[in-house]
Length: 157
Image (cartoon, rainbow, N blue to C red; front, side, top):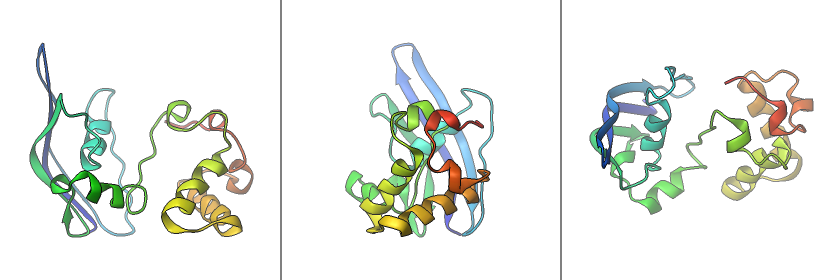
């Protein structure tokens, strides 16, 4: 099992009371498997992912319960230094809105290649080919051409 999340519960403590953002969420992903998290707006999809990556603002957010074993390591017990070694290199997150998650002034290729250079030491044509492969893997049509586009030219939710 590559990722095994059990009973994840994340809440936000606000002046108006406690917001139960994620309650008792469990799922697992095997190596090579793809998982989609689907739900209505405000149902906790993003908070689930933020929780796993240690990106919940504290305060007001707090993980109240659960485990999230990634390759044998409980992500919920990791400190920031440990998580920074995992984020970007072992786990990445692509945010839903390309206008807020990607720089609208830079081509997609530049933004996909940057983490390959920073975290893996891959550059040049090899990095470009990896970026194209990543676009193809997630179902982007004509990735060889689209990789040179800008974020606003992509959509899909």
